[in-house]
Length: 107
Image (cartoon, rainbow, N blue to C red; front, side, top):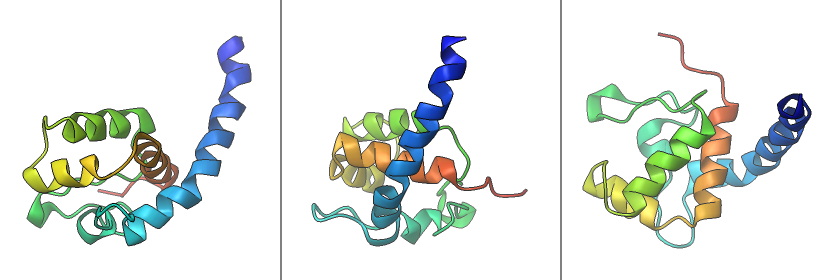
């Protein structure tokens, strides 16, 4: 029952983070992270020709976990490790919330 009461708060938190995440996805950040949209697409649809996975509609926690690993120098490629390291934890969470808020790409 507690989980049901917490769900609206979680959704509210995701919605509040979405504008900040959208800014980073479209424009990068002031610390040198390039825009996520350059590889993953403005709608998070991904680009299989360069190995950039679709992120739209994925669980925010999964995206944050992957970004945290990359920021720590694990997983991903060298470019993604640099980008993830250039994002603060809050920015990683904001980007993840934004991608999670988008409708999943249709196969």
